[in-house]
Image (tube, rainbow, N blue to C red):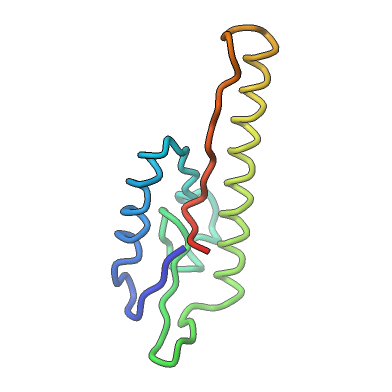
Length: 111
């Protein structure tokens, strides 16, 4: 998640810059993309939820729309982590590979 004082004030570039470090760690990026209409209600950033804040620090976007986008992003991240986990167990149990695969799952959110 990112924020800036002006619309599209580097929010996408900030998130994409974080991806570089995550790739260095071997992370799997679970970007929300355009997988749900709620993304557009929060500004339409396919790389991760972002908001615009005014000079008093208040969000310009509708708070409910942003919350819905964050919930979708979190659910998508957990879903992808489950896919990886289930595939990992499936491969290990079938002995298709010798050792379990170790994955790091990261959302592109900043806490």
